[in-house]
Length: 103
Image (tube, rainbow, N blue to C red; front, side, top):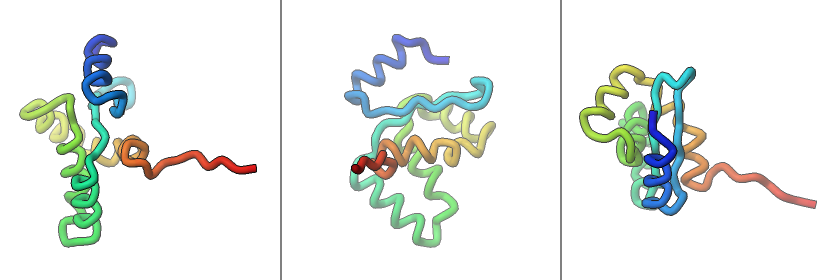
């Protein structure tokens, strides 16, 4: 598991626009950064196209700042549901999740 210092490094690098997602009983962890507009638009077009089944994993691979490379491949091989588990965090990072305020 990442130390507080390591996590703070990512938080500083991406100006607080990260999500630290952990699996049940800390079985796994991943750090995602906020998507850029072009990345999110590509994700949305994939969802509506013939690659819909790959869309979430593709986006997670683009956004993952920890782990990366072979370590990310191994993690997603061991826990193939991680992209879906990151769904709410991705929605928050992309600005989809919001709290409504009213009178």
